[in-house]
Amino acid sequence: MDYVVVKWLHILSSTFLFGTGIGSAWYMLFANVSRDVRAIAVVSKYVVIADWLFTATTAIIQPATGFYMAHLAGFPLTSHWIMWSVILYVIAGACWLPVVWLQMRLRDMTAEAARNDTPLPPLYWTYFKTWVGLGIPAFIAFVFIFWFMVAKPM
Image 1 (tube, rainbow, N blue to C red):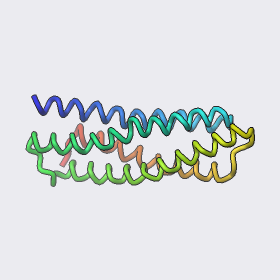
Image 2 (cartoon, rainbow, N blue to C red; image 1 turned 180 degrees about the vertical axis):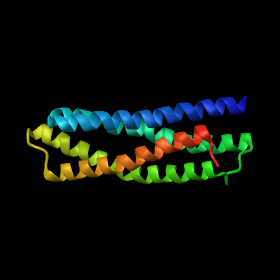
Image 3 (cartoon, rainbow, N blue to C red; image 1 turned 90 degrees about the vertical axis):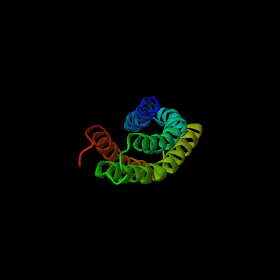
Image 4 (cartoon, rainbow, N blue to C red; image 1 turned 90 degrees about the horizontal axis):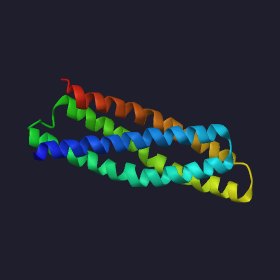
């Protein structure tokens, strides 16, 4: 019974982690495409909140439940699918940490521009491009992690 509960928590938290990432990226991207400073300010504010509420908490739950499940199931941590999943998770995390910082800067810049009714500064767009650039490898890493978790190859 422990295994089923831990597996359920692992799947549920991965859904929140991946879903929050995809949803945040979708809304942030299209708010920025609109170039409406007030819309971008609102969306970036809630993207930061969602990241702290969902991504940060599930980013901790994922490895904890994953390693515990591997222990319960007797999977060696040296299994290639586990090792590749961990490597990809670290890569995604390495992308996410600067993204959190960038999101807070983007939020602050849009809030100021909306408050002062001014356009976004050029630095905003540089940060936004970097945010997108870091999101792409993180997304790809998670897609492969899902495949490893389901297929358990090697």
